[in-house]
Image 1: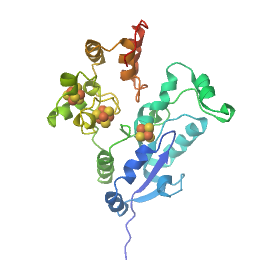
Image 2 (image 1 turned 30 degrees about the vertical axis):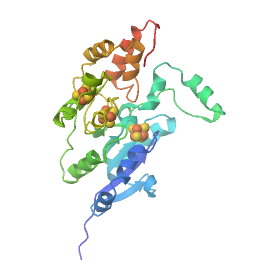
Image 3 (image 1 turned 120 degrees about the horizontal axis):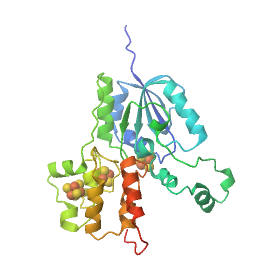
Length: 269
Ligand code: SF4
Ligand code: SF4
Ligand code: SF4
């Protein structure tokens, strides 16, 4: 009887909330179907513990926020044929990277933790690609299960996954959603944010807050002016960009430019 060797997969967690790993578990029946085709070797949230297993595809969730994580990501890279970073924490540093903005790591740590001397974190949170080669990135906070499954299937068929870098506006228009910026004056980041979520927020009448990070050619300068035209003060414009993906260069720069014009006269963010 012949046995087929199945591709091996690992899911690693770094500094994160685990929400992107849930995108795997949320696949439900499709995850069970997937396990017929792959051998999941390490996935702590699913009870599988073998972090140094050699695998074909390693998914990495979370930012690099501790010295231990920097050492660990090199081990993951060494044991993986393809490495895919998943989610805003892993692709841009995520919310944790807010601490990079003002070099206030020590003050914030001391203000938040009762025993700050036990907290061993680095002053900056960084994306995975800052430290090791990353073969593919899935953006979002959290990522979309459909995109995740599509990436796995592409790799199992031996073709590179398709990267979606279009703007959320394109998806929004394709779905014929009503524009919340035009009709409700909501400061939507859809014109500069990469798609992949199915224009989720506008489909519920909400403005996009940029959780998928910058799209290709994001015209943040024009959008900042549009936000100012909607009545947002510079500090509020800065906050739009400096949130989940504050360390992604396009959003980082747009946020700092807006902040630099802030006179401190008002905050409507
Ligand atoms: S990207 Fe968002 S959902 Fe995913 S681990 Fe980070 S904080 Fe959680
Ligand atoms: S609601 Fe947002 S994403 Fe949709 S078209 Fe308007 S600006 Fe673009
Ligand atoms: S619409 Fe924007 S904020 Fe909402 S899920 Fe999509 S990318 Fe994220």
